[in-house]
Image 1 (cartoon, one colour):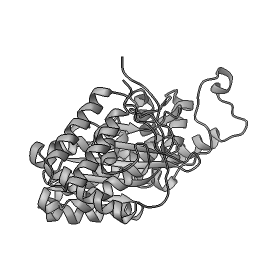
Image 2 (cartoon, helix red, strand yellow):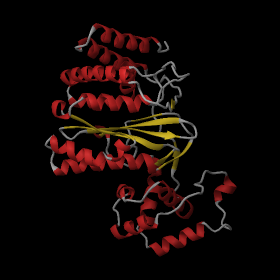
Image 3 (cartoon, helix red, strand yellow):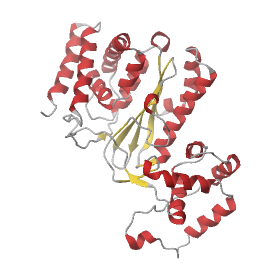
Image 4 (cartoon, one colour):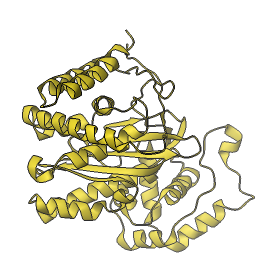
Length: 365
């Protein structure tokens, strides 16, 4: 039977101290180089996209199991430790202002790695859509503040990004991998780590296919018709069936970005992915189109939270409790081999192995 549990990634303020970052960078570099030498770039990328391995790596480097800082600091340390031209692995973006300059960074690093213009454009599109989906297509109350885009000289990529819920002071981490994605808007994630929030607008769910199709049809209508529909739905005298049946329906507030809808009408997007990619189509517009789809055309969206993985939690030094012990054991064993093979001083190696052993021993039998 699968092991299950719930988890939180509490928001921890402040910065990792310089002495810790220095040691984390050295250890991260050695582990990464061993991984790249033993398993290759594709497997290293695959491991970073796995929530258990990523979490275990962060713990080995010196972070608490469930801190939100595992995401931001681990990716930042890897970025500073690995030279793209040496390893063929490029780590772009990061927290706050670093995430906002990611397009220029992909352009620069991709060009240095000799990628074609078309391949670089594909990478920039993947970065943009990954952020757009987790901002607008999934609305669980988490605003993205960290976006890390990692790619190889072969053009394969992963995304590790994180959103925060300021009111609850918790974080949610999103993992993407190019090798496992067939659509950016239909259950595209490799993993989503966090707490199940219950009723969440999830336009990426397979059950939302009818709502996605109806939203697309609405967006391709004339602005005059769309405005009339919105005026009707905002009439305070209007009542919805959901009020009487008890069914879940989209609620206010929501607003339509009319400039974005003008762009949609002019471009006539071929599918929902193209619609979502239009500048200005954000959370409120996605919600508004879904509301119209539900109330006018009877095509309701999914309210299933797409969280896929969670870890046990306690206080700041919480005890890890894996959902899937086999995957956790595999992550620990690979890290153990990498640490033992790394060119580290005895003190650094023993410290890393001790943290790894502590992580293993804290698993419930």
